[in-house]
Length: 182
Image (cartoon, rainbow, N blue to C red; front, side, top):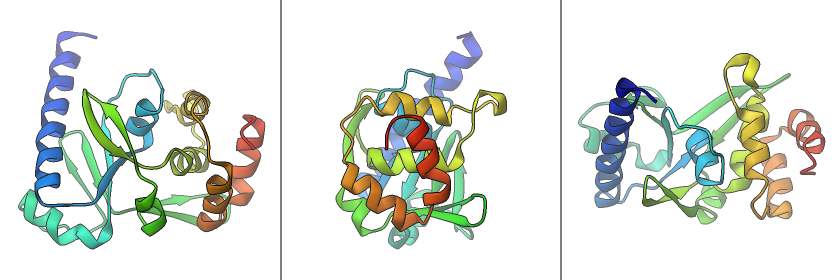
């Protein structure tokens, strides 16, 4: 990692520390997901950004903390992406990834940059990564992240229930079967 990469990483971590403190002070329900969550669950690849999923009910609190009006479902603070919902186009539909009550009840706490942070459930992150299904040919690491995350204890009942919830059986089940998860 060069000086510029190192300086960018320090800025990212500092911004994340500040945002975490502000969200906790405002009692905003949030969790990291995607690549940063994969890292928290055991992926060793370098983090280039942090994706944060915020409960949609907390949109006004987020606007207040950030001092801006959020007109869509996503905003970016430096290399931190804040989303209330992600729409992922699969073969025949759009998967809506958002924090519902069940996900919120199953949030886990893991270490990221020496901080204990809320992380979307392992199973939801695996489903997200399988639905995205991007590989190194696209400059992404979704499939490798799943392989790295599967070293954790998986709640298979919750995983299967959430696959049905997201209505992505046709795309996710074959991928997870090929990776010896299902």
